[in-house]
Length: 290
View 1 (cartoon, one colour):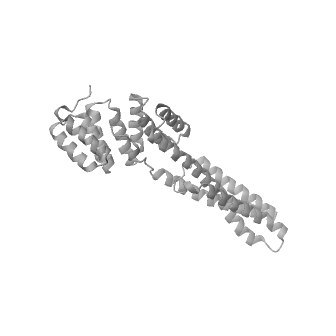
View 2 (cartoon, rainbow, N blue to C red):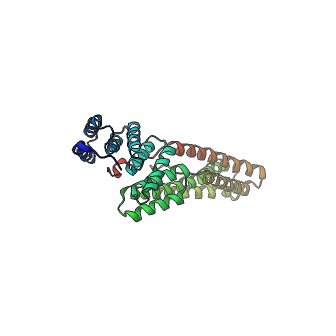
View 3 (cartoon, rainbow, N blue to C red):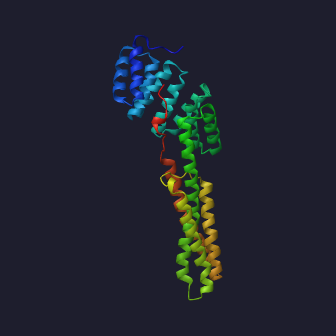
């Protein structure tokens, strides 16, 4: 059975109201004072973890939630808080384990499902599993703020990823063909057009796609290695094909194609590394404070 707050019930309840009002500092002081007299109060430790998350002290929140879990190993909310705090600290693997445990203890907890979904897409890059978990969360609670927030973020992420993949395919090809055009054009416009038109089409496609996804411009793409590789291959094929059409020479076409692949590959790898190192934690205010 979960330990109760005893004579400190009023203090813990007051702290909860303070947290809901986003007065995290006073709530932390009140809970710490209470825990000085009642160190075995699991509810107070859990609520202290929530207040610390709101205050931005995520490492301390991990410790507080851990104390709540030591007192009551089946405290779902404590696992959720620790998972959220770990996520804020970019400790995705540990956060994943706590979110998974929370879902095991409470399969219908929409906030636990949302946290697990966030970790699944971050750690495993498993989009299908992410969608399944979000759908479960929304089935349990159609008004779930965390699930709805993540669903919106995923749609933006998906659009942004497709746009970046297209840019990785079109921009390097356009750049290479532009320079190739200046290099091979000797006034024979019929040959030069093999480079001019693919270059213009690539630039137009980049511009149009960028306009339609402008609202997601601040979202970091979730590129995968196969996507980056496919984009680089497409850039190389376009550049090599257009180069051969203009020069009728295999060596020149190969140089253009490999150059486009190299440019696309470098930028693709940089984006892959950045997306794995940059955290996009969920907004704390969309989670309830039990």
